[in-house]
Image 1 (cartoon, rainbow, N blue to C red):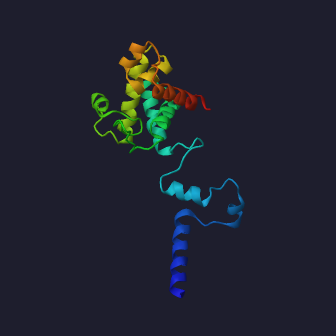
Image 2: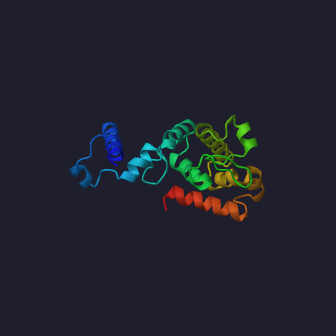
Image 3: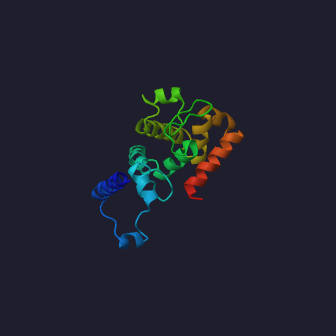
Length: 178
């Protein structure tokens, strides 16, 4: 039993050396992160106030600047498409954070569809193309992102496909913050 206690104290000392000693005052400070938050951060799972993983913020901001697309719109699409799961695969075969179809990804120069940087860059490039095709009309560009540009052209608007209508509404809801 003494040996187990020694191991525990040794581990506590190692943790204190890595993260600093926790004082009673720090524990009473409401702004200090909880153990769960600290553990999540150490594991790479820290999120911002919207619950979006910080690890993608820089990639989203880079793509936003590169293509001139609002970062919040990119976040909204990723939230609707994959809920920030870089390994997501839809029943139709769309992959990654922005749910790119393999053929579309290849045409955009994406070599690893599951690599967050490539997937976000390719998805935002495709979104930019859709915005250009539909005169910067965000709902039509989103419909084209979901159902394909030809489907939107034939419908002369958001097509009467329930999945696409729900998708456009969901992304716009996230984008507008409700």
